[in-house]
Length: 365
Length: 121
Image (cartoon, rainbow over all chains, first blue to last red; front, side):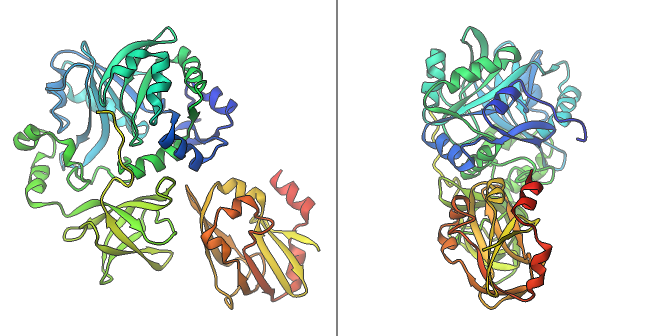
């Protein structure tokens, strides 16, 4: 990643809006705007925020029986994913670890997949090598923006009435400002909202049209991270990686019943065993009782003083109004209400295991 | 009263052998919204360059390094409950420590306002 960071089609807009640009996974992205992370975070929870997520990998899959073929590399039931529906999932490796998480949409004559920016280089060849007879086309000429928050339906619906008819995890193609866009009702903030794939030459105009709405403000990667953490959503590279299994990561909800029973995906031995016997560790929500944020790699000790795990994501939660964290604790620990200590700069700080999410998810079902 | 500045973006004012230490507005702006501060207690002694506290913004933790040798006389306790004051008035009400200087000649190594302005550009 020593190359010059890449710029998204919205780069000029970020700079014009006063975005503080940082290198993120090889992309020059706004970490925040003048409103600040806390203000942007709260604006998203209360009204609506626009995020540029064009650094994420957009991929089109063309061919026959794509859903069935995806099932050979993902533990999700993609064979039965209906047209117009999207589903969260992940690629697993032979050891049952998570190679990346992703969103797969059935777009009718093709499938549309969105993967993490930092894992594009792995995921595209992985799909190309394993999806026999499927054309894997990485898209470089479209922006991806997320409009998230309780007012997202108004912001997007004003320009695109069809967006109002979608419910959570539905996707369609519709015109916005005369431009054909893919609109999906989903996101990664815990709020209602949309992710919209836009041809690059029109992305700036469409983003400006959303921002023209009184209730919509731009938000950067900083707010995106604190929003997803409060929503209890995993960040690849922090909370999940090649070594963590979906069961350890408390993601068994994302593996459909048939797949749990039948297996037939990489690492099924471990994942099916952990479903029955429990995993060696599990990801839990952790609420520090004091004010000190517990960051990634902070040690977790049980009440008796033994090390039981480590924080994987931790920050200040602007909506919670205090520090929030997620981390892994060893089997035998992790009951909601269990008291633990977090070793922050050498001092034990009291904390409690809590149910995730920290903030109620607000999806339109 | 003369104000001195360190390369670690702290300011110091001195009255007699008692100095008041805080972070500059520039530092506060760079840190972003401050949500937590960890301070040393009264009586703690430290040397120039020692870590004498931690300031946390939403995104990250940043250490405070001692610009001189000394001893904590008072930590600004109001910051514990209202760390956001460090963004509002870091060069005023939101001072961090009052310290007893061990060696006033160390002040000569610090910058004046013009020097600090040149540092931050």
